[in-house]
Length: 494
Image (tube, rainbow, N blue to C red):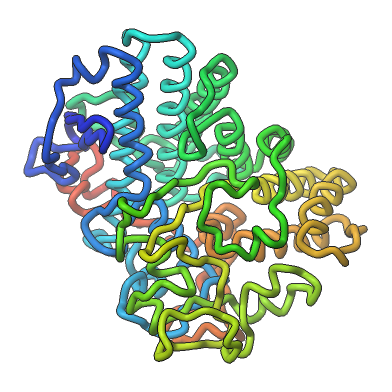
């Protein structure tokens, strides 16, 4: 990240790349280029560049386990305790599952995460800087800038959660975070403190929320709007332990959004037309990403070698906590013998606790990828209120969600840690496979505990990791260490 330049491919992808003064670490060469004066001349053209960022969320990168945010969601759950590999499959994502990928500074997964989020930031920065000078309605300018600010906030937030130490609400958070990039320039940038990164993350998302209030309507759920921006604000506040703020923004974000029906819950989590989805990546059949797709690894029924040999399962201990009357109990087969559960071919492997939560939407690996939905926001609201000591309000928020999933659910009367534990169990069940478990464990300073379950040491290699250990930090990629003198070898994580 010593220097920056950008190249823009309108509509398909705005490829503004991070480069160094040495042989480039993060540069990708576009197949076509457009003059940036043309791109920023009208709001229509700038929107096309913004659409490139949306497309980058699920495009194919350098390897099959690099399919944008969908692949990062898999990595985050592979590093948790609730997603179980039933075999080694064909090898993809095994290093994340074994907790080795992120602790190897030359590993492709470690480099991909860094590159992916900083390229989003690099794409967003010139849009933020220049959209106001474009010709077009002010409401459209507000929408485009608000979306770009939301991307910049979210990407920095994801980076600091991975490469920095956890945010400690009781501390001063001077620990090394990640470089903050607000311009496309050639200035070498060192690591800002975790506190400073969160300050910038909040500044960007707050400005975005303000702009959304006077912006044009977002075209679809692949775009951000004021609800998804407030949802991200709630996630940030939750990570910072700002409980009242987290609850407030979660409630505002999910207001007026309908929780899905039981029929929708069993439909495969593959369509952003689902009324509960607030933010998701829309994919169409002629833009399939084949074996880069989320559904090529996490669905029950796509005919990939990974799924044929390695159906993804739920932690048996977590499954045991699900009520028999809960619709979510039907998403996993504890026997591994239920023929109602789809598999790609007759010869495909079945396994105990295998899932059918995710199903492909067509003949290819196509499917929309969920990034935010109302259930998560109810859970943020409930958790934050409970941790703030507002137990009655937390019980109410939890009840709305839990009753929708389980008609026999009785409103909780628990308080204190007992209520918090009930909420966290509901969160683990509800958001299984959606990419939250690693960051949840890290933000709460909890250990990884896969013991006494269907995880096996032969496949996972590690069944436990101590809370707060250095291994919870991803290493800064070695190529970045080599290329950026402001980070250098002395700036590497321990």
